[in-house]
Image 1 (spheres, rainbow, N blue to C red):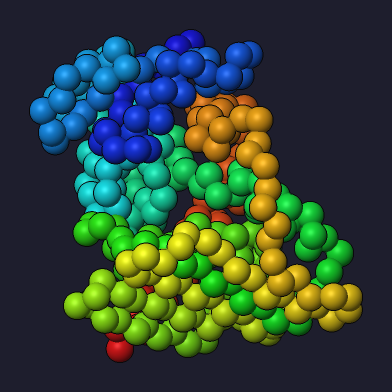
Image 2 (tube, rainbow, N blue to C red):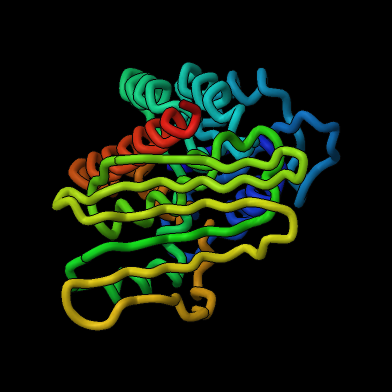
Length: 291
C-alpha cells in the first residue's frame, strides 16, 4: 500500500521532507510514501515539481492519508488537531505542542481515530548523540551539565524549554525519567538575549543542569560536563562525521515503518511515554521560570 502525503509549511524542514519523499532510501519503508502536494500560507509556485494545494483539499482528498506538519511551533497544535480529526496520520516536527495537556489530548485523538501520531526527534539519530550514548554505557552518573547555545529564535517558537526540547530528550534518553527541582530565566529583550537554567535530578537523586542560551552571534553548539562515580569525566563531544543516511531520512523511515505496522506496541508505548514526559518537564520548567 502507498501512503499519499501532504507537507504543511515550506521552510527548511518542509523542503527537506519533500526532497526525501521524492528520493527515499532504496528498499526502505520510506518508499511507501508519495507526496501529493504542499500547503503554504505564502503564494508559492511548484516546489521540486510538487504543486501547492489548499488545506481544504488536503483534508478531503482520499488519496492523501498522511500530513507532515513543518510550520512554526506555535501553530503545530492547530495543524495536528485539524489533520487528526480528518482521519489523517500525522508526522510533526518537535515539539508537538507548547503544552503537555494538549499533547495528551492529541495522542488520545489519534488513538480514537485509529491513526499514527509521530513526533520527529532527529537529534536521537545524530552521530553526536550516538557517540555520547556509547560513551555512557556502564557508567554511573554523579552529576552532569548540558549547555546549549544558539542564535536568536524567530517568533512563534515558544519558550526555551519547548523549542529546546531536543536537549531535554537527550538527557531523558541517557539518564531515564527526571524531575525538575528549580528553574530560572534571564532575559534582555532589547538585545534578543535569553538564558534558561533548569535544575533536575535523576530517579536516584543525581543532579543534572540543563542550560539553553540564545542570543545574537552566539555560535550553535553544545558543551557537556558529566562526572561519573568512577573514571574520568566527559567534558567534550568530539566532532562527528555525518552519517551515511540523512537525519530526516532516518526519521522518515521510522515514521513510515509505523504506518506499515512494523514497530512493536511496546516500542510505540515507550516512545510516547518519553515524548509526553519531556513535554511535561518542559511545562514545569516554564512555570517555574515565569513565577
